[in-house]
Image (cartoon, rainbow, N blue to C red; front, side, top):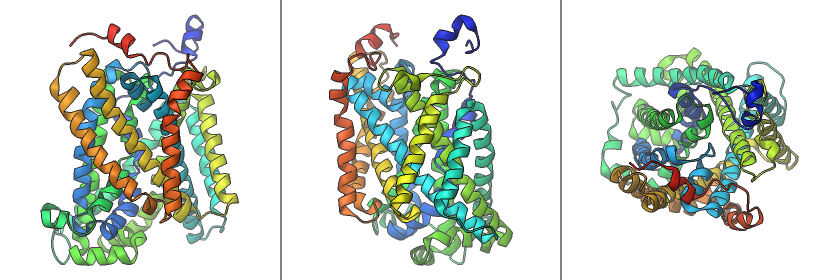
Length: 486
């Protein structure tokens, strides 16, 4: 690939990103977005308490299976998608420009809100950590501002730098959890031994499995973003599918084993009681009991770095959405420019930084709590939005391959996407039913979030009419004409 600095190709590459990211680098990027330690320390205890108790680890298995069906069709379509717009490109290619542009709006809302959720949480967590270690006690928004600036600086530069930072942070946070898993399972669990609840159907469907599944699926947000790095991948047609499967498998196994180890460390009944009493400190206390005080201190630090890794990863994903939309005429063309030296979406990165800063400023001025309000409300919007996009992507895969016959493999283009569509539809129903819970218990906020996402999706059709030249490459006919028959 020519670099941006090559004068003979400057015009062509000014709107292209470059890089040679392999499977490992992209997997680091998207697994970091899933924030493994944050999920294990924050979501798992809540899932145990509010979901199906000691059988909660099984929800990660179910989620991974449904998402694997989705990934089969998603990756089969990779070679037929015209650009690195990920969800909106896939949906637009299969269902038309209106659906594509509507899904682009939903994707922007979803990634802006999930990034904002983590910004709020990390501001609180970092401030708490600094004050606990004898530092100054400053408002959460100060620390959030520092994180926004650092993420913006890294996002402005070449993707390889972010990849290296995320790689180091991810290895550290995953390492401490795997050490805890190994010690707990190596000792045969706690007083009751290793838990078997996740293998018993009666336990899996006890309690509130729907709520458990809702929390479990939220832990996978970000794995599907592999396709957004298409232009920076070494060999997109091979690298993107492999990275998608690898990321999903790693996340699913990691969450399942870690949740099972935490339940086993306490015992089925005691685990539910401990999670219900104080979910926020359950995993740190587990680490202290099995690994010692020093390890629990390290885990608290790594919890903050886990949040930062998620912020940086979402920043990279969101800036590439802005970049792709600028390139295709949906947003002003300046958003689609790449840096002459860093070959990065520098303008889109600055836009992403500004949007995140504005959202956090609104939260601070309104006096919202960074965890119970900013984090929970925005995470609720993002969870529903991402599931809607995955469901539409499954539908787009089915429609695209039925109309074009560019790939006649039944499993890849019909069976697996259909199973994914059904599974995601059921999960979406559960999410919508429990949206007020995700939004902090407010029915008004839950309804408002649903309406916001619905309006964004429907806006795609009038936007397609108002901007007839936007995303014109999302034409199924042109894709079908140029695609090889398989």
